[in-house]
Length: 264
Image (cartoon, rainbow, N blue to C red; front, side, top):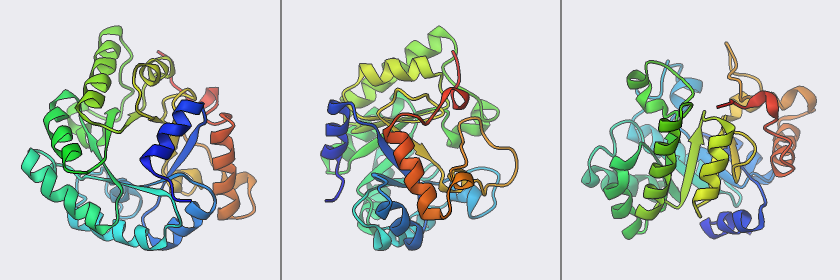
């Protein structure tokens, strides 16, 4: 049975964790969906793990459309979420046109990075039948504004503002909230504050779902590994086995463990 937004809502209502993993091509889409991953994210992280760039900013809409179409052809029932690249949703008009391209390519939902300034755009997308995931916390498209990849929401003022933004974006029509690199206690507060399913990466074990970049999950990303990453291939005999172990760990809430989280 295909995973839909309603499936994710039911997971949250029942307190059942769900798994999210990136994929960028048909082969990996088939592998991860058949291994039980609930949501496939075509992330603009492809700019780094596939293209070798030092950030996600160079990724174009055409590239995201291409990879979304590839994933859609290999997918076996997972919900497909596609990132909207840098500055492709700077205005509501641009967001509507560019989101339509991704949906036509096979996405079931688009993901936007930002805070309360996205309310009008999210409302417009939602009203026109485009499901939206709102990405808060460490938003990689803002790396130059942040001055690097840093944990967000560590002081009380920033934490309260993030909770407020999550609620505002949900009210605007966001169907899912994604939190990246925020302290685990804050992520738990936001998960409780909104009815929308909340996905975490580096946000503790109390969110409704977990996401990793597939290359990180397989331990094949070169260089320094982020704190929130675990190599599931190290204890598996195949890629399929590694993905299945990831899904099992997420659903059992044994991943992320204490060593993968950030404190306030």
